[in-house]
Length: 50
Image 1 (cartoon, helix red, strand yellow):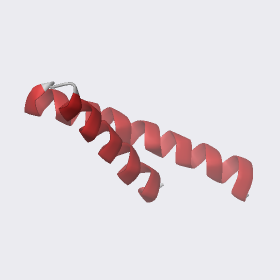
Image 2: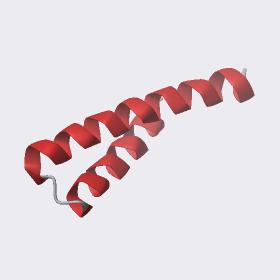
Image 3: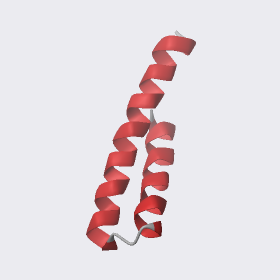
Image 4: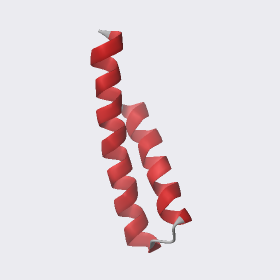
């Protein structure tokens, strides 16, 4: 889940910066990306690794 959170947060930060949301907007998009990364990592773990 840590890897998913890291990758999701990075992608969110990149997307927020790319679209020019400013610092707070970029932070919020990064937070959303981290949450999505956690959910995706959890689904991969439960469906494929357990």
